[in-house]
Length: 289
Image (cartoon, rainbow, N blue to C red):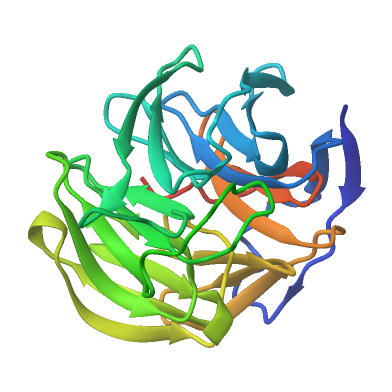
């Protein structure tokens, strides 16, 4: 299925060159219950979840087709690829993080608890060059959780290093979207219930410093482009420049825009998960790498 529509964006002039001339917002998949967690592999294909249906799908950029990748995901939400091209997922059914191989097979449960206590429900993650994972752990009680008992009161940002050692880094009202950049040495984290997004300086071994308010807007998911612009989601996609100034709004005709990433051959395709559908938009900028 491919449905296209003229894209009409609001902008203050600063972001008008980000989108290709005459680009259209193209629906490349629909009929899902709620799409989330887009993650791009080493060749530009984008994987995303349909969390209520416990499935992961993949958009193949060469064929422009969406195919099933896995139907046993632990109710996967946010996802990211590590340096071995293994897909890690925030599989919140039991408050875990899972690992998948290229065949869609679960190969490991790499995280189950913090200090012996069940996590609330890992939501989104970003993986650094050391294969350490920064992840958010809010609390959204799901109707498919059986006999859930909250064991950790705090809603935190964590770091899990490549040896499996977990550190609690910060606390929020409801941490959600997260993205980082090795090149910029920055980590962005949204506190969606407080309508704020923060930025940290990334130091060595998972340590963060110099937390600052980046903008007065929370976000479900987020990504960065090569110019350091930050893309936040909720009601469509809102783009902020590195100084925290909103430069572009991309409307998406769905109830909620959950997440966003860059994919495709040259990473210049903006891939958007929004409620029951997924969309692509051709950009003049590539995703941050």
